[in-house]
Length: 448
Image (cartoon, rainbow, N blue to C red):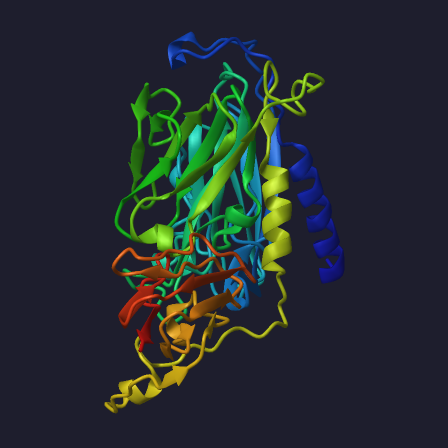
C-alpha cells in the first residue's frame, strides 16, 4: 500500500479513536466504591491509533527540546474505556528507534509491549480487554526505559468502572520529567504536568464551589516518590488509582514512579488554591492552581457545572499543551553545554570568577534564568546603591520568579513575566537575596 494512503487511513482512524471517548452517565452521590451505582454500560470495542514520532517541542518558555512522542505530544493521547471493553491499539513506529507500548493492567504477554519491539517503519496491534478499572498508564518499554519515557513516550489510560462514580469535573495530570543533558539523572532539569512547566499557573484549572473535582494522576517520572498536595481542602485519595480500593482522606499523597492515584476534592469558598508536587519538584515546573468560582444561577449541568453529569476536561488540556508545545519536526533544540548545571564555562575550566559590582538602582531577572544550566540569574548580581535609594527589579524571563531577601526584610511575591518590584533601602549594609522558586539564583545589594 502506498505510504501516503496508509498515513491517510491512520489519520482517519485517529479521528475515530478520539470520537470513541465516553461520556459519563448520570449517577448517584458518592460515598465509597461499594455504594457507587448507575446503569452499567454494555461492553464495546474501542480502537485507537498511536504513532511514534520524532519531533521537537517546547517544554518551558523558550526551551525547545528533542522529543520522542506518541502522536506528536508529551504526553501522548489519553485513552479511555470502560472495564470489560475490548481495546484495540494500532501502533505505528515512524521514529528512528525501536519502540513498544506497554500498558499497565491485566493482559497476556503478547499485549504487554516488552519483547515485541516494533522496528522503525513497522507496526503492531494490541488487542485486549480493559481491566481493572482505574487510572492506568502506557509507555515505551525499550531499554533504557527511563530514556524512552523521559523523551516523551508515555500517556494515561483511564478505565472506568462498569458502575460509574459520582459525577465530577475531571482532569488528567501526567507527571513527567526532562533533563537537557542526561535523561537518566536523579535530578532532572524539569518536572512538569502534561509536558510543559508551570502551564497551569498561567492557565489555571477551573472549578466551581461545591463541585466535585476528580483528578486522574499518573506518575511517569523516574525521581524518588514525592507527595501531591492540594491547598484549601483535605481530599480523597484512591491508592494506586484502582477504583476497587477504598478512598483515604489525605492532605498530601505520595505517588512513586510508575504508579498512579485518583484524587477527589471540593472547595466551599471561591479562591485560588494551589496544587503541586511537594518538595524539589515544585521548583522545577509543577506549580499550579485551581481557580474556584461560584457558579451562576443559570449554570448548565454537565457544561458549566458538574451536578448530575460529569465534565471531562481532557480536550481543553490537550488543546492547551498542543499549543504550548508547538511540535516542529524541523525545529532547533537547545544545545546544552558540557558544564555542570549552575557552573559557568570559566568555572568548569577551574578559573574562579566573581560578579562585577555595578552602581545602579535597576536590576533585571534575565531571560532563561529558570533553567539552571543557562547560568542566567539576577543582573547585576552585585549592586551598589546609596542609603535612601529605591532599587527596582523587572522580570524579563518568561517564568515565574521572586526577589526574596535572606533575612526576611523584603519579598516580591510571585512575579510573572514583565512584573516589577521595588524596595527602598534605608540602612547601610549588605543585603543578600535569592529566588524562592529557583534558589540557585542569588544576588546582593551593597548599601553605602
